[in-house]
Amino acid sequence: MPNSTNNHTPATGARIPEEPNLFPNFPGMSQKDKDSFNVLDEPYKLGPDSLVQDGIPRGNIIKYHWASERIFPGTERDYWLYILTQYNGSQPACLMVFQDGETEYLGPNINVPVVFDNLINKRDMPVTIGLFVNPGDTLVSASWSV
Picture 1: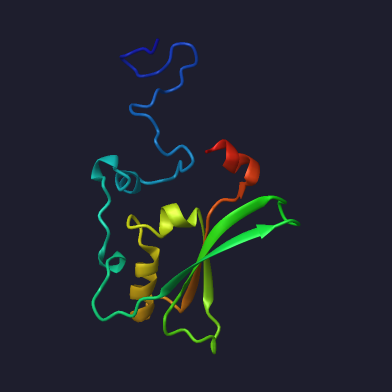
Picture 2 (picture 1 turned 90 degrees about the horizontal axis):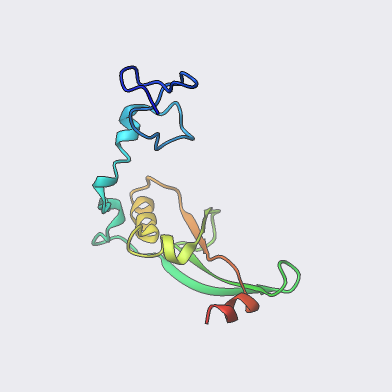
C-alpha cells in the first residue's frame, strides 16, 4: 500500500502518479496538449470546413467492389473514390487513402469529402483524390456474421 505522506510505494520507493497517465506513449506531451484531449468536450463539434458551404462545388463519391483470387484469396471489400467534380485528369492529383472508409470517414461525424471540397476550393489543399477502403471480408466470415 502506498505511503500517503510521501506518495511513494514502500517496496520500491517509486513515485505513484497523482492521476493515471492517459498518454503513456507520449511521455513528452505537454500538459496543455493533454488537456486538449479532454473527454468532457464530447461530442466533438465540426468546424466550418467540415460543413457544406453554399457555392462550393461538391465532389463525386463512387462506390466500387473489389475481389481478388491472387491477393488474399476469397477476400472481398468495398471502396469508394472521391473525385472533385471539376477534376479532368489533365494535371496530376494527390491521393489520400483512408482505412475503414465508409464507417469512419464518409459519414457525418467527420465529413472528409466536404472538408476536401472546402479546402480545395479555398486552395488550402491541393487537388486530391480520396480513396476510402473498408476492411476485407471473406465469404466464410461473412456467412458467420449472418
